[in-house]
Length: 183
Image (cartoon, rainbow, N blue to C red; front, top):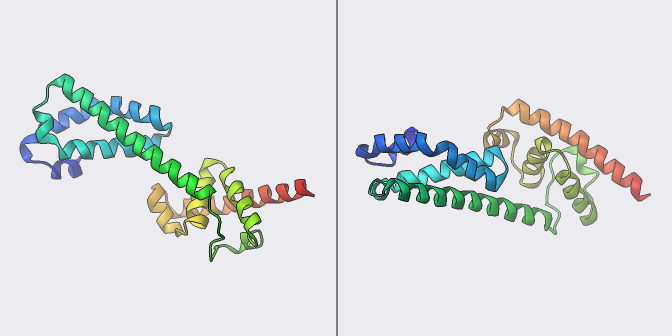
């Protein structure tokens, strides 16, 4: 709440606080309906309230019904922006045509020796449960460190390391199964 308050004049603080508590849950539901993900809906909600804080002078002049409509438009647009960004990232990830210059982790280096196997690796990572998929993509594809992933996903670094380890095991099982099916 303090971050929002620093973005506006002091005379709008109590109005903002009132609006925040009055509309937060309904705005979250709208974002969740678009994104189907709790964490992404929270991100959309934060972005929406940042927009609201920036425009408190205009919002203070609106009637209650106008505010409600305005808030619905803001949260819906924030959620759609996040959805599109995530979809674009996913499309870019699946359309990668070149093998990254350096893939970290000795346990999967053997699996990544040609473009075809890299494509299979991307598909195998995409098929992992969400818990492992996110950390594996951030680590192996986007080349983030475990510490960076922990910060991005708001997890402990040990949790990220455990998920990477378990994800590697599941990934190797998936790749081995694919290889067996091809023979």
